[in-house]
Length: 449
Ligand code: NAD
Image: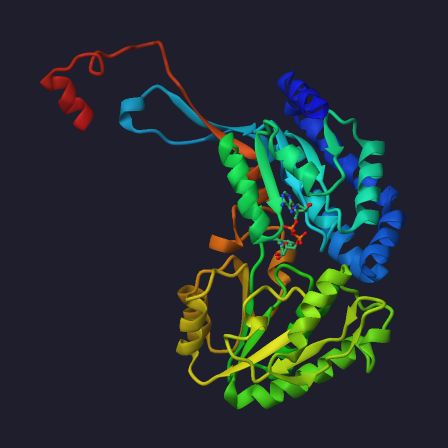
């Protein structure tokens, strides 16, 4: 593709290497978001019915904070890192050069269609790469605005948006990119990794999965319910790190259900389907897929749907078993299965036998139990006594593990993700001792010491 050749040529000429150039790109990115704020908010409303508040906080403000953090630390991050050396290296300087990979492909999903297309690009440009972004075709209005705004602010040899469906992604995956950053489903993640392996292109995979929340008997149940409802219902559950289902200790289950009901009403009123700020399901296929879960177990809250507007009310299902369909796949919608337990060890054992989740949330006051849960289980990241908040801290790496992904980003971790750490030993020519050239006993003794 012409654009990839152009980007590679531009990169190889060294234009992206200076601090001044990179800082300029980041500030341009900020200006671009400010200039296009209104069309972006309108597009997010159109594609997903995101309210201006939700769209601004979870997409635009998030990106502006990421740019600010990156600009603040850019100079320091770019500097070569001096390291120590063993005695055999006496007289040498040893350091790690922070090398950009080159030309990066960013593939984005639809659920936070702006944030997840632009946040990796911020890291890629900060680290001195050029980039091609493939936004999701499922949110076409946002994809269109992203394409227009990038075109207005960046020449294609630095940053380019390629709109389209999976055919475009497949074409892009055949190109000789230097790095691929993919956010999306586990299924497509496998396709991306397979294609990347043909050219040995390094990848970051930001995938999904079923992220559990645990509410133990010593939790502040009211706070837990509020924070779980907030984390679950932002974007109508279409959040990769939304609490997918909840395990509640049997002693606090009834209190939790009551508190969740109350929290939902506080957030979206008595008729969430008619709340103008309640996000819709992205399309009818997903609406149907999620609605099919409604006959699992017993309906404890919600259950109403509006197929004309692809909306599903905040719903709670109880009497759920691990074998029910709702427990087999990532729900990615506003339905919350609530399962009860008696022994914490049993829940930990159950979760440990499943694919490693992207997030895990533990609610409970006892620090030993907090430590037990967060140490016993492998998961991408999470919170104790909250949901989602870990993603908002730019000083924490964000990413999955196992089937929820590989690699991480945000802040320093974005810069590092898009950087090759190039090791250099700078040798002195003032002396050139013999020990490495001779294969005798004396040399071996020196090497062994
Ligand atoms: P998806 O995997 O269907 O699509 C992601 C991207 O891949 C889109 O740009 C799409 O065009 C492309 N694509 C789809 N099918 C393809 C194919 N066969 N070949 C090549 N490219 C293809 O994911 P989605 O439905 O857009 O997003 C939802 C998923 O993403 C959920 O699993 C969610 O948990 C996950 N997700 C993860 C994160 C994270 O940061 N870890 C963030 C958001 C969403």
